[in-house]
Image (cartoon, rainbow, N blue to C red; front, side, top):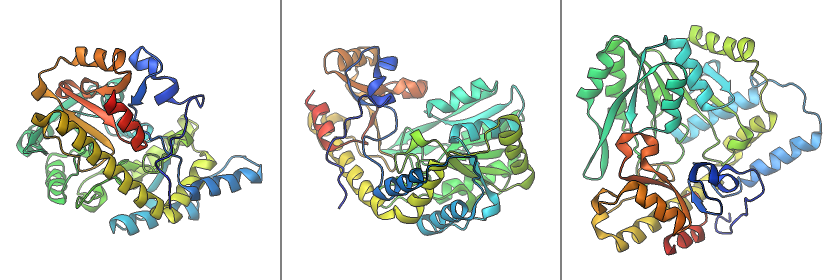
Length: 381
């Protein structure tokens, strides 16, 4: 019904992954499995809805706070996660990272600590440093193929008085961990105990695999919290910009919206982004489920190819995301030498694990959001 196998040529579209691969890898014309967007066209319902809106021809200032957008968000959380959402708690932002950064500023002072599970999405520590806050790392540990957080170590970090915020990635990028409800409940209790506020980035919430289920932070929250997400990852529309979130506390919400409008002048949204979100959340579930099945098979393909070539890896697909976090430490290869071989001999671009902190040394992150033919070409080298 939906075609994810036919490649779409993204060259010449100002595409970060294809047109600007040399910016990160110093070499052009590589086969990229890098930045976390996908090589698929978005859902037909989104294309139709955006086309209809474009045909209207008038693109004046608009408002995100409308019944259609708020209702679509509430519907998605109710239908996908059985999680009720109060429309008054919903806020808009140009991107999840903007929303994270602004909430960091609202809830902490220069020099305060932000607790993060490591390895971490690189925009997290760049945002923390860019706002003159301190990264407080709490490493995740792999145990029998599953990533776990040492809750005692987490509590030690949360108990430090200058550590004001837990910045959570749920599901986790790059490891692909899905936090269980019990784990999230424990974290909520610890944060309440130590007066730590929680910012939860849930942009990968729709991409969980097998029996793993995403639990939104709002279902377990105890103290001050903010949840930020977007349809951009799930429906491959990041170029439209646009994100949204839930902020439970009215004072914090007012402060965030005041900064968005009065300080930063960003309260008028990108209308195609609103239209795309509404179409995705009202009409796109079937397309998304078909995509999820295709991506899961991509990850199984990676596992078969890797383990056939290197049985000692025993690599297993992640619990969530279309990002394969591959532990190569058993091969005892030098990360720099590996990257040079991939780039100059195999003509492939794959994110080095060190991008995500020192805990990522010895890993690579391979983006499986592409037609399977691209993966076959990549594994052939």
